[in-house]
Length: 218
Image (tube, rainbow, N blue to C red; front, side):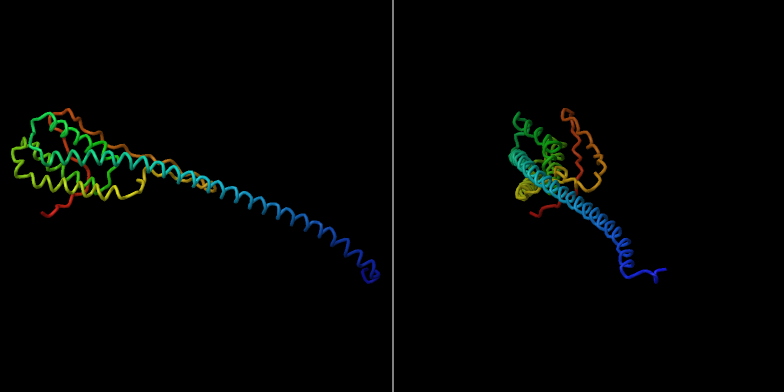
């Protein structure tokens, strides 16, 4: 039948078939380009939001770090002052000595533990162990152990000196940027710290979790 058609008729037939196909292809290409443009726009919006969140997070971390170092410096200064006094003073029955001794254990157990680095903690444990032994003997062997106490105080001071040079926010205080393109993570349940001892007890238990402190050579 096609052989009976003229060239003009064949061209018109082909055009009648191709034209709708071209129109359909044009529509499909338009839809694909639109969807691609929408995806690119969404990706740009997500990247911009993540960028803004990261800027806000960095600023918040910087402000938190500044406040953290301010508190750390305050507690470190008080700690060095107290251990310096306890390392050289032998007026054990005075009100000043008793007040500083009590304040040392308060810093040891609670306040200092919020800002100290691991090296400071180890040095404080070493100093606290010697001080505990002296308290147990009512300071009768203070002269024999005073050099050990002074060395331990020196170790605390050196650890604090190194710690103040570190401008890094502890992991627990760092803010985190949640990527807008990802599913939010499940909340993390933190374990509670053990309840601190009662400082009003006649004899306070002074066991503190830490790595064994190194013995400083004399």
